[in-house]
Length: 260
Length: 308
Image 1 (cartoon, one colour):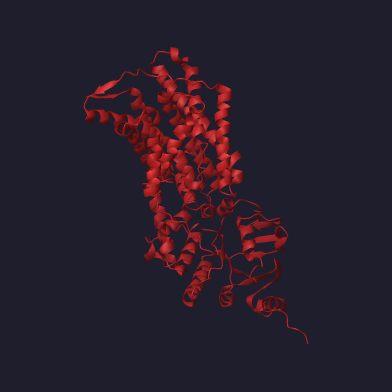
Image 2 (tube, one colour):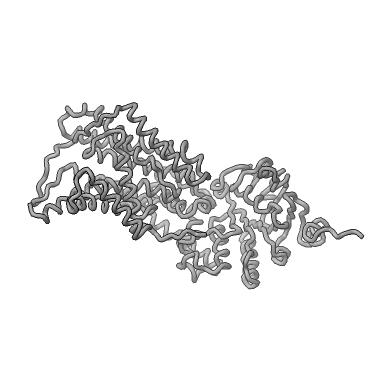
């Protein structure tokens, strides 16, 4: 079953077509890799889907619902979470507070659409609610083996752990679909190996994962499906094994062999 | 009267003035906290608030002619709440029309837009209401009360009590409610907060609404001492801005503290340094210069270094 589908998705910046007529789809419950050389339009595609940027044309269907052009906060409420290539944590807050932030405004809990009685309840029982959210956040941290760092400032964690914290926060909002933008960028081999375990654990929770990654070992190891972009266009899709032997993909990465 | 009691009296007067500065400073600081932008039209919103409050009050009671009593006191609070609602709406409309379209523009653009809005509001008021100043009648008997050798008037008590109640409500809202939490999150990082499911546009509208409603209260309370006229917001607004900077701009407790501190420094400083009445305003700005030189982040502000 497809949880996400884009149809003829196009994003132009002036004369540059960053994403060109892309039909991208994601199967529910699987890990999908999105690869391609630098500037292929991978992050632009992510931005269209998560609502940070609006497509020039085409449509995005998530869970049977057309989400094309919706604002980011609405898409987040519908159950799509993401992390960034450059880490975006609340650096002045502690590790556990960052995860609490992901929990507080999770799916279906719109602070502006409370009925009066609910609003009153959130006034009166704020500390109780906080305790529950805190407990829940600690569970997520333990899941990611970050529990011992709960009271440290997010900005003080080592790089690899900051990335994992960002993933933990995204996951705490209990998304159906999780986008990871170059999660292994800048990680050492040990951290990358740990990240692979983390992604497998997320998959086992039943969350669908889409990741952009340049580390081919990681991509080939953990992805069920791979889509390849080049110059804004989809050039291939298939299982890791199919992609490894695809002529167009090899050409895009290595260039064409000169014929004598 | 001995020197000590004289200065005690100045401190009481400064406290009254300062709590008005605090209320107005909150609007500057909340908007800065989220948008990193100084809303220079904020002072004129307090003027609009004072005019609306005065019109409603006069409409309900018949103005100067009314004898102070339960009805005038009730009318005063009705006028204040109605004026708060009006200014909240005005603040949201101004944000939507004059600032929101410029959110991704050069940082100078919304600042200039704010100065434009400020001119439109003060000149619009002069056009509609005329330029003469009006008195806000006391809605209660304003017989001075003597406590030892210090004199306190009921209007001073009303100013302080109303201000304290407003600041308490705001603190409660920001710290205890989910909307307040959304507001604090947005002030840390707007883009990330969007991805946490927070409607940042709504948070910004709400911030302007609350700041403007507090300015309306400040304007009405200020008009007991300063009268109501179209340019009344300029100097009061500027001083409240100084108060916000002293306390640490972007910090809510800082704005409250800075306002009270500035009020007291003004009331005590002028007689202490024998500054003639016409030059009393120099105290506030001298304090501003000292703070900017010695502790530019303000008393409670965080020391943020610009990242390269």
